[in-house]
Image 1 (cartoon, rainbow, N blue to C red):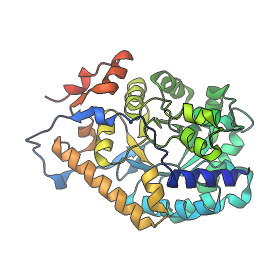
Image 2: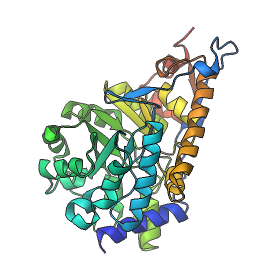
Image 3: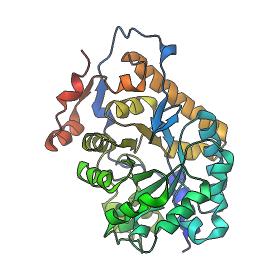
Length: 357
């Protein structure tokens, strides 16, 4: 099977099948302390932020999803048009197909053409850099879309459960150290299994500029592989809910590092984004809902993200937060499985409950 046909399978299964993890991302365990006296006006709320020192109009990222087949062109174009209009970052899917097949480059480069001033993020897999890729391929990925940053996706789980997956992940950190020469910020990006505090610290030390937690609770790539291969793929079914929930991973990473943390994994509304930011995230990534909207039009993508931004502003108003920095100082109550997980990992949940008095 070619890379292009596999990418198309992933896209169609993601769109048509129920592939969201059965495990929740953990944000239902997070509650804000309501301010009956917010002492601000909602029209004063400012959601402007930054990511790896680049200013963005909202702390929302269109997560990298696709590329490498004809159908991806219109999807990436519509997503990019939305990113340009809203002033937010956008990632593309893995560019391996474009690196190895020049006739597929247009499915990625369309993003920059549609969004000349947006923050566009390239994407290549760690498995390739642990094998035969070098700084040369990284620079090709950046040049392909004139990327402002390069994401290196850590998809060990996905590779392990798919037939003939690339499971040589030895010397990953050394590969990251060498990639610092690429000339743009590096983002270490998980793809649905989360990143622990230990791995976050190692990645920061190796030189990445941001960490995208890609936590459990959103699209499950093992579930996609189970649909793609069928009942023979028992690994996909068994490991469909493997990983660290997004809310937990967000706290673990933001506790362990000083670099930017992007919270991605099952985020579907502005209230979840507000919670993630208050837990320590710099920005939040959204994928699946926008994938479906992008197959209709860029206007539908803009409409959905605009709704999410309004939800974020409402949450900020209700806790008296004029800015994203204010939101990060808001009081939170953490309960349920998320609290149990964090307590067992040595992270004191009470610290979130009494930040502003």
